[in-house]
Length: 367
Image 1: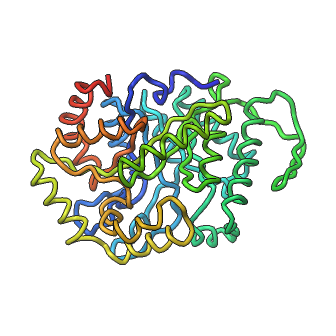
Image 2: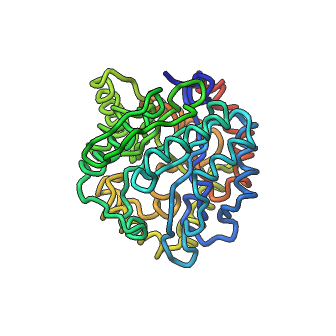
């Protein structure tokens, strides 16, 4: 059962969330002076702004080290459990996800933390499960990152099964599995309303998609182009049906929205090319190529600027009419929503709110 007052389950056909405001630079690997400062003050102000605007959710990146370069992109980052709990207590309607590495949080502790967060917010907490890809970060913890996605997601499955059993069981239990051997396990309180919070996963490998199809309410996948994206959505939803489930499929995009197309394109060229932090871009692409399957191989040769502009995700660059039309095309390809990012969230979101959201409403995508 799912907590039905969570904004992730509202009636909007195309849901929106803001991605990565807890990390310095957000998703833009740029040297411009106005790039995002991920201070607590800025995150709190942004969360209240998004809450008032009716945006469904905020999604953080669980980052432990940056990517170097002149800006040390994402090198300063607010830890997502603490960040999420504080923002939930300061907002009223918006869902706020915590992003958690299965390997970095013991499942008994994790179950207690997540249930507490859900109680704090009366059901507005969401969990984004990460099964691991950044070997450099795992080395910081002296934890081995398995080369096999099968092992990574096998561990993640057992981790989540234990959490789920804690949340749904009133009796103590023992657990003997491939990765955990636990005695008299118990946890209380349960999540708010005795219902499992919305679960998100961004696995793009075959094993990752199977994990999401079996466990998640929402799967995030990278959108390279709309034609291949439509095929990917159909395949993912078919996998979920194989488990007797339905799953929402989201993508993520970066937004450069200005009054005119020319202004948007000129600023995009300025921050993502002329002022790109190329050493950090190349470091990100190197690590993604070595350890992650979030992007197809051709993305690393075709879309270097896309990585500089927004971590490699789908570009939405233009005037409000163009942005709204492009979001409708994403919806028509089968996607249930998208995250959005900006070079500076608090400076740029108000124009998006005032100009793009009404256009999405007029197109019937949002109420």
